[in-house]
Length: 372
Image (cartoon, rainbow, N blue to C red; front, side, top):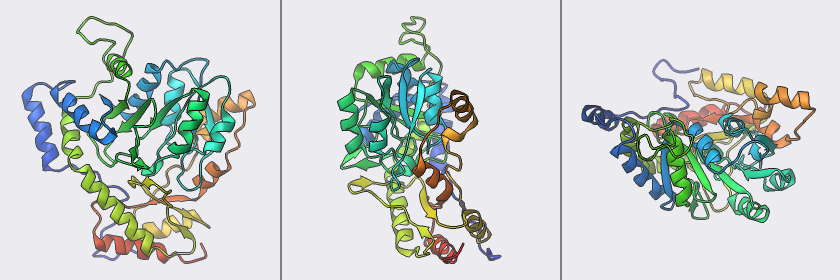
């Protein structure tokens, strides 16, 4: 039970400080508030996180995925291989362009796509693979990229939870045809709301810029059919401030995770492994609970430790996917996905944690004991 002098520790704590507020006010006073110099500067700054790839800012991470698939020409008749253990936006973007979602199972350690499962899911209609760098851990890109190259498939990286994560020195968002990032307030860095697409292909970047702005580069000179998915300069100004802080915040997250790794000893709890060569940036610190997860979460909540399950229902079991698959007689064999959804719990790891907070988190987890 939480002591009368102890405040609950939230699972996540978005940072909106005076620097962010001043940046937003400065832009509002300028009168230049949409798709202006702040957006261009944010794109240029973010490119340094992705090996200087072209960056195209949009209004959300979901829009980033949607526009990248559109720009790659993926649509009706195509299939995209996606993990079911992810936020629904990963699969929704595929459906929004009219393509079919093919779910593949995950690795138990990284929670990313299992390369063997991906290879087995490829058909003549497969157009792309969408690895999700879940919780801030890079997917097995060293194995997925050769599969994509062999079958001539596009790789669309969902890096929405993985700003500054890397595998063998290559940052996520710099492996495939394009990468996508989210700047929602709970992410490792944010812009109030927003997203980014990254690509090494200059022509693809230009197509993305057209798509986000009604198909126009010059006003009223529409070249293609597009949409309004622009980022505001207010969001970009906040994002630029956060961009200057994300590396320090990342190191704090990593240090907090290392503390929890070293101090969580409860037999029923498995701390998150890190693959060789991976730089995990801990958007979430996600453990596995063997036993009664609901009881464990209730005990943690009673102790004032914020906790949550991401994600309790795999995408293939959500109504928009489950019902059509049932009608079509289509089933998915995803044992690691089902196991992860039944076992995972995310604990606080954000950079606002104090040493006392970390001690409380570890003690509360260890108090769960062996029998849940």
